[in-house]
Length: 188
Image 1 (spheres, rainbow, N blue to C red):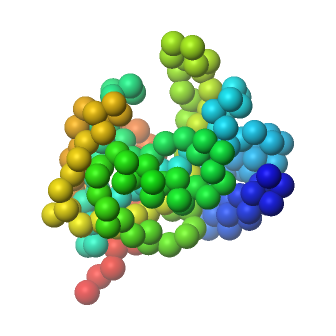
Image 2 (cartoon, rainbow, N blue to C red; image 1 turned 90 degrees about the vertical axis):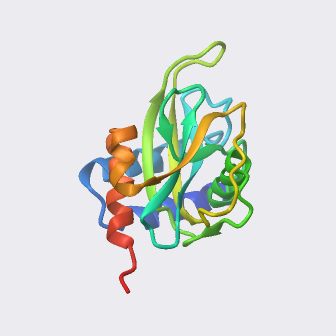
């Protein structure tokens, strides 16, 4: 587990050196402290919080993204989920992207973190309120590939033009990913 934590700290440290806005830089610093001090940071049983991996799925032109209308949280979000002990958060993001969308031809744009968000999850049933430290990776997919919604996780899946994302979810973390995607778009 020590090697896993060291790898996570290296991954987070690389992200910390990027040009981040002040809010994301603060969240990355919190994530670094959390991973350094919580041996169970990859497990849901860590009641303070835990790491999650998300797939910010975009088309090859980076003009649209695949969003899910989350069943429990009642909002449009990127696909993703709990690490459940897996220290390879990119693999978690790819797995969750496939499980929640049915897409089979997902391609990671890179191995580094695309975005990081720390957000509060309210208490629900037997789960206490806790933090999610969400490591987000940019993933490419083909919008023409058929979608298969995970009925136990999602009300709906939709490819959404980047310009419309904040109409569905106006949270800063979504707007930040849109801005980063636009900035990373390859021009012909």
